[in-house]
Amino acid sequence: MRRQIPGFSRDPLLNPNSRGKYHSSPSSKMEIDDKENPNPNATTSPAESVVQIAPVETPIPLIPAIVPPIAPIPVLPPPPPIPRPLAPLPSIRPPNGDAAKTTNENADTDEEGDESGPEYEISEESRLFREKQEKAKQDFLMKQRAAALAVPTNDKAVRSRLRRLGEPVTLFGEREMERRDRLRMIMAKLDSEGQLERLMKVLEEEEAAMNAAGMDDGGYEVEGEAIQYPFYTEGSMALLKARYEIAKDSVVKAAMRLARARRKRDDPDEDEDAEINWALENAKTFSMDCSEIGDDRPLSGCSFSSDGKFLATCSITGVAKVWSMPEVKLVSSLKGHTERATDVTFSPTNNHIATASADRTAKLWNAKGTLIHTFKGHLDRLARVAFHPLGRYLGTTSFDKTWRLWDVETSEELLLQEGHSRSVYGIAFHPDGSLAASCGLDALARVWDLRTGRSIIALEGHVKPVFGVSFSPNGYHLATGGEDNTCRIWDLRKKRSLYTIPAHSNLISQIKFEPQEGYFLVTASYDMTAKVWSARDFKPVKVLSGHEAKVTSVDVVGDGQSIATVSHDRTIKLWSSKNAEKEKEMDLD
Image 1: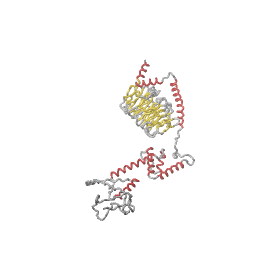
Image 2: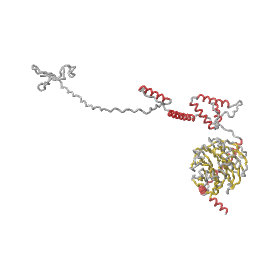
Image 3: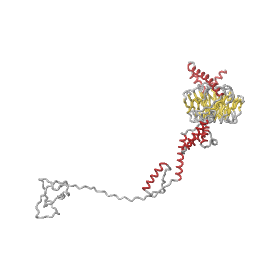
Image 4: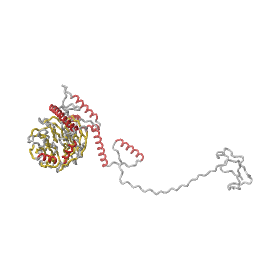
């Protein structure tokens, strides 16, 4: 019995391998014998004979796809219950600007996703902190904006602009710099509030008023109205004559100084190094020769006479005293100041004495204690006083931010010099008389040309107030000392700092060069010591220790053989060289 092979069909739609007929080759036959392969499901028929079918192509047996067993899914334990938060977390909301918009947009998006989320408010403490932070930021921006504004420096112009802005012209106890800072902050506030038009209108009115009031009907400039920069103050004829006299004398002295320097350089017999070594060896032998109580209160200044026979001191009692040297005996007392005396100095040409005081005046005395002149004009207490090398002019410094030049013979004020932003403290004159140096609490030292009135050098380097200044006799070195405990040496030819000496452990109150050749300099300090330094390499030579309180002033006698110091311990101490004493003994023998 023959049967049909499963999977083959005459219908081409049911068997895709057949195209409407059997595909076979003539030589291939296939028979299925029920005996060899019995089919239990087949129905046998005895009459049916062997059936030959057309040979077909050998089909490719279909391999059933092997499906890997799937691992059983583990059963997870139920999640633990989420604990309820103890307190709701506050939602942070930016106070303003684009950040607030972004936060609102994010909040809208979150609400679309989850409308059931709670809305929290910021706490009072956080709100106050944010307000404080925002205020500090606004103050910083205000200061930045104010620093970029141009504000007039003349006090009259500052007052005029405040008046036009409708602000008080001055406040109680307000000074010029404070008034200018107040105007700057007002202008910055108007700029930040968007009132730029009002500010520009005020500036235009001010400019128009200056142009209109600059000339009166007769064509003359109205005094105090039109302010042009740079502006100059017209000097008196006495100042002009003083400038001529100073220029003539300084030319002669400068020529003599340069001729002496050339002679030392070219003369083979002149050995400058040997002279410096001899002077420094003498300085190493300085020792305390005398100590005397100078007053009932702390002493504030001292000065030798030009011949070294007298020493003048002053104290905070307002009394100055003259002492004979070297025995340090009281000669006379100079009484006349109503406040404490701050400095004293001898004239380089005679024995006249000048004193400065906190009563805003300076006084001129003779050695016998007779008052000659009183110099009035400063608006605040005086700090230091110094004579010009000619002896005809006197310089004073004050806490009113000015220093002034006076005629000693007529007590007339010749020059009122501004230029420091804070109080002016120290003053010194060049040995030639052509220059003056001033220093002050603005940590700045300035060099002025007395022949022209110009500030020719501004010496910047100290980081704290400068209290002492001194010219070297060589003509091109200048020493300054101040509250930063350092002494700086400046080269006037190069207009820069030449050397910085870390001199003391407290502020330097006074500094002086040896007046004859400038081979050494002496510094006085609040660390209760005075120190001697070499002017060649600026190394320490001698420490003069013995005072029990702050050393306020120091001076060197003309030949460099003696040093005087005064202190808050009320004592005058005289330091002398032992070599000089030996030479005197040899001369006597």
